[in-house]
Image (cartoon, rainbow, N blue to C red):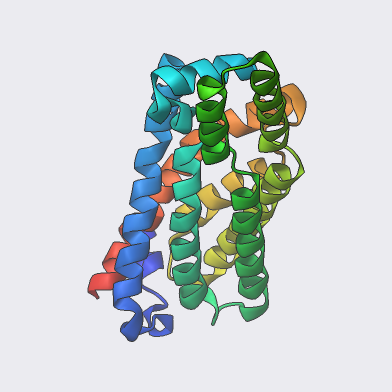
Length: 234
């Protein structure tokens, strides 16, 4: 039934965009690969709880420090952009208004994520802290590190998280009516989109939603990747 549903509206597929569909499929698949990697990293190397702990982590293992500060999530934003452009082209004929809004929400979310990233800022401050000779210099860099960490999951992060959640939800709703993607794929996307409307910084329930969305997000990424690869070949 899923395959039959996916074949009912192939007239809406733009043939000149096959390369984009393949790239977007690879982007979705890579995002699916990143999810378990990030979970393993957080289990093996939990993020430090203090600024000095971050400085020590960057001193001993800077790559792990970058990963703990969401380096993979930064890469994810580029992949999300590629995938959303492909989905916009595929689904705009079904509902141009919703897909335009969805693409705009995704762009706003990606921009906000980049504005909130702290990975390379902390790496730079950590290097300066570890090279400092006086207590005054170290105190200055410690304060700078605290400021960067306080903004890491602040307003920009929360805004980006919710905007991308809205973009995903709208895209999944259009998928449901398109015939290009199966209804199961669309419903999984709707579940992920709803759960992404509450950022992980919103207390215990926010963290439950964030962690609970990982499994359906993994499934959705794989389903979307599979379909995009199919469209890239057809």
